[in-house]
Length: 262
Length: 201
Image (cartoon, rainbow over all chains, first blue to last red; front, side):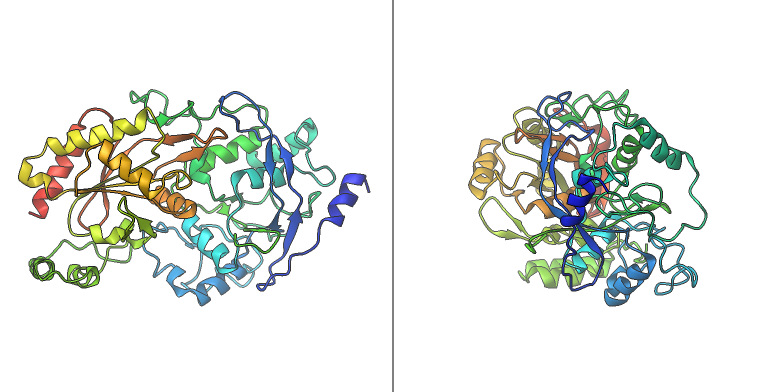
């Protein structure tokens, strides 16, 4: 066990949660995002990530079922179209039954951003910010920031090249250095500020005669163009509307560490 | 998705007129309008505060066309152009029709856009009683932006990158048109606006 791992375990006190969901603590700290954070669109400015707690795994279908039973307004027959599209929970047998008996531990996908937020609200949590998600996902099994390792990059990239399985595997892949699981290799995940991730020069703005579509110091230019896997996440998230759902897009929740309101 | 898309029936329209004329509260008028369609952005009821410091219920806009946009007050380039575009669009309507259109501008910078700042902004841009400049908390601004398809991102400098669009909401709060044209009237938006006004004349 290396030192980083040992320190990580020391910080990994479980949060006391009424819901009993499995959250792990992340210490935060200085972090360099693949997205520029400074006022100059091309400048790499490290940001400070505050300590937070993150669900160890994506929210499962079983957990989501309990949520819609307690909050019937989020059942697929009741939710207004403005909050979730027609494919919301489409694989379920009915408004209150999962797809099949083996579904409970699979990640719940086909949920909109609004629905994911409502789920997290219901357990006193919120969706992670993009930076929190990216920070947690920079770790491999032993290192908190494995992003510079070409072998690791190739490994996660290999997942993105595979077509999504018809039936998703259960949650609970190998833990990373923070004890968070399934950040890569299982599903895409919503973040709270998904509609802050627009990228200059993407296909939606190219050729747009309206050059004033984005105001300010130019939209984001992505700095680390080698981080293809993470860039694909950003590209996907920035293309979505808040009511959209897809069969490979799930979510997990985050909470502040000190028990302060999320 | 689950609600049939209602056109305002003659009966509803009469009830609405009666409720409005009698000065009944918003809830009574909403009841007169019938069930809110599932694809109405008024399904979301953020706690907004207007430029006079009063609580503002977004669903109180139901019953007529609304031009809506999001902005922040310290934006020096594009945001003034949004105000200008809205004025130009309103001026393109006959005076009588103009009175039927409401304008809602919501700040995504609640830290700096206090009621006083919004008030000053409204005066600087000659916004009359048809205009509501509103603020809310960060999370609600993010949700409203998500509903409207507005993207924004706070920079370390305190400035924002943001998309600059104007949405037209129909009488039931459904997005009927959207434009990214600034400092000029978008003919497509104007056409839809005229139709929306005519539908509820």
